[in-house]
Amino acid sequence: MIKTIILIIFITILLLLSYIFYQCKWAKEVRVDILNDKLKENIKITQISDFHSNILRNMGYFKKKILEFNPDFIILTGDINDYGVVKKFNKAINFLTELSKLGIKTYYITGNHEEAGPMLDEFIKEIEKLGIKYLKNDGQYLEIREEKIYIYGLSYHNYSFENYNTNDKNLNIILSHFSKNARENLCDNMDIIFSGHTHGGQVRFPIIGALLAPGEGYFPKYDKGLFKYKNAQIYIDSGLGNTLMDLRFLNRIQFSNITIKRQ
Image 1 (cartoon, rainbow, N blue to C red):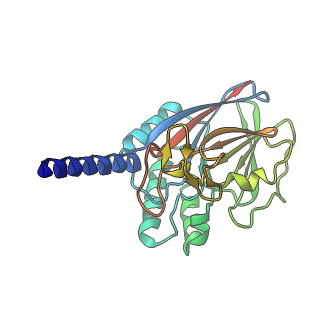
Image 2: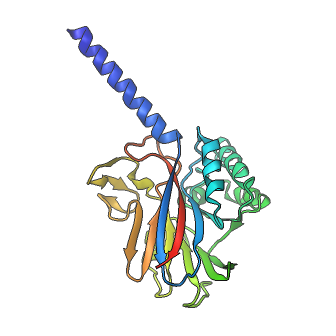
Image 3: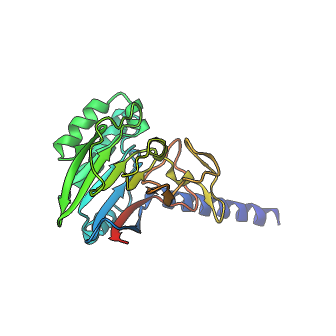
């Protein structure tokens, strides 16, 4: 009887560890629709966040799903690199090298992990070699199928809207690693905020959602998914990686293929 109980416990632990490993290393695609009345034509965006120098076991699937979706551009909303030690630095650059082979215009902002690390300048140099546009408290105008878009990227620390320069007619997109930085400085003409940082709590439970998210506290409201906030909308991606340890429960790593549609 004791041997049977020990065997059951052992198998249960093995299955749980296998499940957690799967949740941490095999990315899934999430499709999201966001409605906005400024558009006549759909705009498609792939959002990738919080990679944290992870290793994807299904990189082929990841690239295939992005190519099938055929986004107008890709946004990297911070913490792609994890504190900048050489081993992690190389993992992040290898990942972005594979992503750049897709030939899709890509925008990047820093997260707290990159800004706290010792190799940020080297990281920026490498991603710019790959043709990735770094937005540091700055914006860029785009015109896609006659749709006018303004995309503004915030730093995590020392973030500023000093260079924010647009109008009500543009679809105004804010990239902010931590959505709270944008929420606390929201202007009436900001339409959609794309963020990460929370990892969706990494550990989630049905109905309850995330138990804890960095900067948002216990049982956070702004943990993962699409939210209405004043006149704007916020989309928080729960990310492709992990922090502190490889731990995910009911919250598999993900990337988001987002379609912004006319309301």
